[in-house]
Length: 305
Image (tube, rainbow, N blue to C red; front, side, top):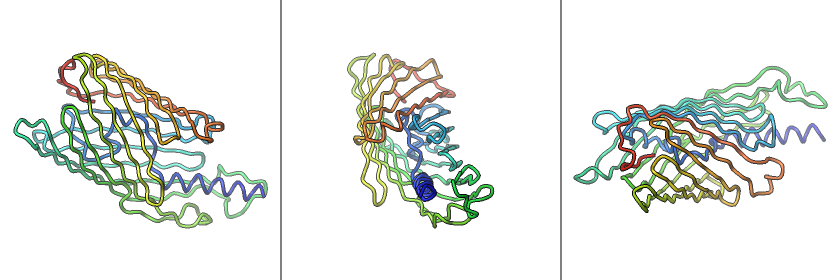
């Protein structure tokens, strides 16, 4: 019975991680990870490192995600190029991937304050199950030996409408819906990656020259799963400090804060679970560190995040 229970738990963990893209709370400062069309949309070259420890109460098997991203404008801001390197781990299951993005930007008005971008990215991910980390009361020969790895290609597309004070983003991920087995013995059966859809909108309200409020909403949809919503609001002070709150579909309440130090910026968020899982899993921590290369903005008057 115990063996069956362990197999079921591992099956659920592995399958859900393979179907689900990594979860982020810091997309408010790095929306490029949600949409390849955002590549090249900033008046600088942002490079950002993000580290997330989810459900920290689970200890060694808690999901952990690390991301490095970079994008830049070219050809008089008409073209954007970018890349994301991602490493995600949950117990014996891990994935590491790299994506390359291309975006094309067009101006929609004479003064070039409103623009539309269309983008796409190609992704290659290595999925690994370390079967040596699985321990059973009654060992099964089917689980003995090393690890199982599989390289899986994929693609994403997106559109991005943006100006100084508002943005609207839509993207689709895991377009190939690749199917592959999860272990050497294939005891878990074939796994099909699920297509993901994201829609994110934000609007910045300038209260004063040194104070702004930015509400936003993110909708995340998976085929055959309920749509998840994030309702966000943050206060930006002097364009150098900000703090905010986010409510994620009755699952968690997120507190966020960040600051700019010239071209360097730092942000932190804590997810407090409000679902039944929170009694076991505890909260989630996420931290981001970034540097805006060739940043020539006048910070007190121009707002880009």
